[in-house]
Length: 292
View (tube, rainbow, N blue to C red):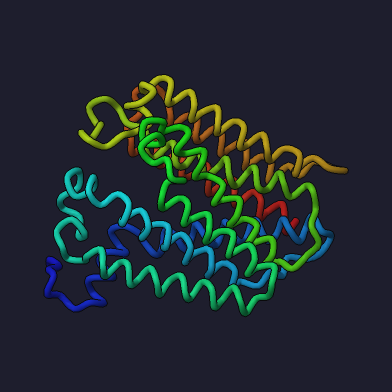
């Protein structure tokens, strides 16, 4: 059944989520993201992985509110580049998504407040940073012409969410957790690069991509460098008194998958799939390491 502006509200919102924020996909991502980060927080502090999974709900909601902020920010471009989307067709509207955003942020805040000052503090920091992302750090026109800087300046939100997971574990800080921040941040950056890297005949007019800005060859090289450094950041966590071969092997496999799927001539879909798998495998390696 085709959705229209007259369709029931919940059905329209469900259709929007399926189109722009697939709940199953994001739930898998958040479970691995939170599970891996929280397990490593406990592991590095010498405890057991017993994090409060309300933190995962907060992170899931923050990913949703990032999507809703992007809809507000990019509407003019997306309406032209993607006229068949539900938002472009008026099935859902910006005011409706704005009200949904308010509900989502309130839910995040309430959950964070119930989890104590550490989680709430990191959530507030995350919220403020997403607000800066929404206004593109007050230099939006400049950032739009410097796409790599755009990606790098927006990436710290991943580290902030990783700190929400750390706070949810309620353990002492370990300097080695900085390596966890590096793995999640670089893995997410590789995913961001991979989902906007296209062959020349796949480029969408009016929509910037890393390949259109850098050229396909240089964009692939950048993606592969980020993948390599992201997997390398896993190494200090897997080589302590003894080598954790399983998590390390999974990290190496992630790099192989990312490398193979980003070969010359690879389609946008193949590269995006490879970058997605790399991120998921790195998060799985963190979780494996954290509970081993």
